[in-house]
Image (tube, rainbow, N blue to C red):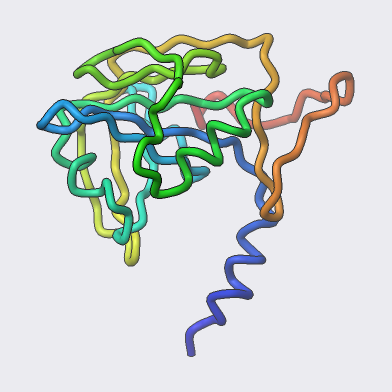
Length: 173
C-alpha cells in the first residue's frame, strides 16, 4: 500500500532545508535556472554533491546535457530569486545579476555559496532524476544568513541561538 502523496509531502516538509538555484547553460547558449531544496553533500574525496530534479521539469533534458552547472545557495535576501526560478517563466533571467563560472554556468550574485560542478553521475529516483556533480571550484560567504525552507514556507535563523552539536562526527565529512 502506497502512502498518500499529500500526507507524505507534508511529513517530508518537517525537514528544514536551505534553498538552492541550479544554473547551467544549454547547448544553444540559453541559460537554465531551477529552484530546489534537494541539495546534499555526498563526498569530500572525490568532492561530490547531489540534487534531484522532477522529471516533469521543462529544463531537465537541457540540464542533463549541459557541460557543467552551478549550485547557488541562496541568502535570506533572495526570496524573490527563489520564487522566480521555481516557476516556468518565459524570461527568468531578466535583470538577474550574475557572472559565469565553469561551463558558462551562471553564478548568482549575493548567493552565500557557489559550487561549480562537472557532471559525475545520474540515477533513477522515481519521479525525479538524481544528479551527482563533481565540485571543481567553490566559494562561500559564512557571514550571510541562509534562506531556509520549512513546512512549505521561508524562515529565518535567529542569530545567537546557535549551539554546537555532538555530531557530525569527522567520519561523516
